[in-house]
Image 1: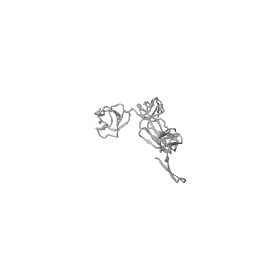
Image 2: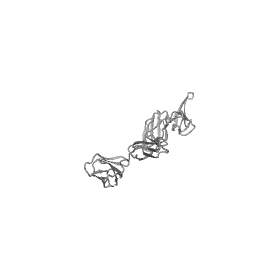
Image 3: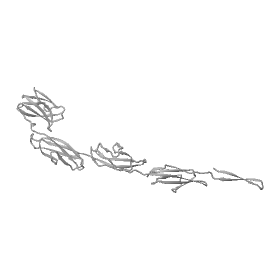
Length: 334
């Protein structure tokens, strides 16, 4: 916009009055729009206004500039319109970033994974455990539902709202698998039973530890009773099982002149026992020596023995009679 001023000049001698028009520059301004605080490493855009052309302290001549200062910085711009020149400045404060860091050990499956926060300058924590679960604790512990490798993300914030992120892979180790085969002792006081542990999975090789004190894959010279076996793989992951060594005496087939019969045999699970001698007690054992059926006395014959809830297999009936103990082999087929 042009503004004109008139200068009135009176010349006393001649009595004439003259006018002179001259042009004056209108007042011009410059301003900068942008954030005055930001986090280190962030970018922002400063926008100048008020002029036709601009010259920034950074050397740029565009209307806007992109900044990413690493320390507190003052930016200035000179706005020019014709012969009108104006200057503006903005001070930008750069806030420090927090530093995100953590560690977590590899653990065996079914154990807690402890996470230790090693971050600095932090007031807020957000954990993503990589399995759909989260936490806002500083140093949480988490249990994974399956072995494997998980990508864990920690995002931290400081008092200024600045953030940093740490990403690491953590491992949950598989447990070894354990199976045991048992050879029963030949009598209740015999020490000739044995148990053999078979390990697989995990990270071989394996070590063996029996509650009998033996540290070999096979524990030998065992009396009837319960024993605990623990196998440990090279990663330190362990699996434990309890096994029972029974006595095989009394389950060998004996026949007292057919004084006791069992039918049908094989059966789908329902057996009929007939006896010509008085029976004091009846017990049925599975092949591992586990007692699955018991009856203290049989006052009349025949007697029904129901094993229909048991799986297919071989069972042994032990009958204590007035004439001694006898056994019968029973077969369940479904």
